[in-house]
Length: 173
Image 1 (cartoon, rainbow, N blue to C red):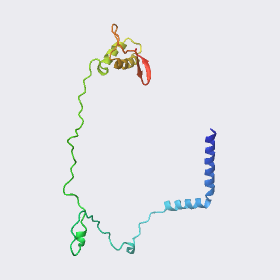
Image 2: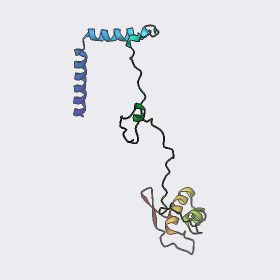
Image 3: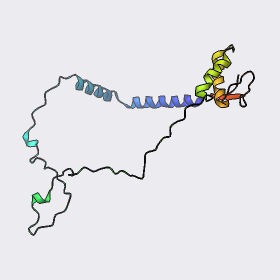
Image 4: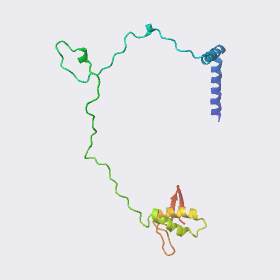
């Protein structure tokens, strides 16, 4: 707690020193500059004196992609600079025949005892007489997906003991 107070106090002192070092004259100059800059009417741009313009226009840029045999008299300016151009044939992408896209095997249809297909109806039957049906259904379907069965009056499930739901161990109903 004391460290926070000390940091706040140091920050306040630095702020006061910074503000005190600025003279009122500097502040007024800054305010005057902003006031002067923002409230004047916009003027049309003046015509630029042609004496300030460049004497020569920039030259086109050429790329030289391949070499030519030198002539005795030397290359002419036209032969020296060849304009950049696109390739005559578009590049093609290589297809590697040895690499095949992954194939996916068809998924098996859920069986009658799988959690997605059979647990809900079995748990509805199991929880119909329970006073809190919704919590019973939630825990029952989780236990059914682990045990792959729901106990009946004359049938027991081997793994029907407890299940972990959201990090909590809960006893199967």
